[in-house]
Image (cartoon, rainbow, N blue to C red; front, side, top):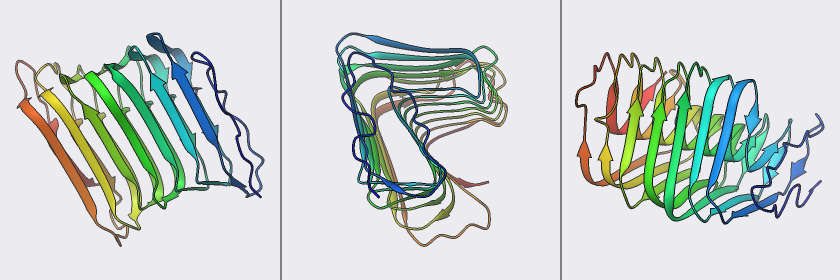
Length: 281
């Protein structure tokens, strides 16, 4: 059974409320688009187990097929996640306990700035421009954020993940992620414990088909991180795979920048900084 246009064509920052899908398995075709002319600030504050997005699909045990989410931002976007516990914030958000197949998430920043901030007592939360979480992600699915001028990722949190593109699934294959920024790129951590901060982020048990991550920036700067960021990782591309999981596809990671600055006056404390990072958990 196919259901077209679950939520489509929203006006100026019309936040698409997550739709509750029945528990039975079925198949959905969804097209969502948001066009924003003015500068946008998204604030998620003092929340627990909350979700905030411009485009959002929240599926039960269902399949999302041949679908798309698109945001066109005409004058910059700032995303703030403050004192958030186990919460999620994204421009495009897909949550599913089923399958996501041949589905795209796209953000066009129109040569303006993108800023992501996690602050206060934020813990175990996720923040991204594009967020895709499912049991299975397959087919020619993609996440893309283009046309960024300056990109800033800043986090003071614990056990949280912050990325421009973020995807997680038990089984993952055929997914591509791409981030393109023409100006300055800043990765900042301030007292984060066990945090991940990335341009592109994937987390999966099993790699079932070939996948790719591409990160492109101008001047890429890691040097403004401060404090004891114990056990944290900063990278243009991050892929985490479960120990003992299966791999039947290839992984391609590409990191491109005009120049790179690493730690300056900060205290590393077991922090990993990389262009490309591929590890087991």
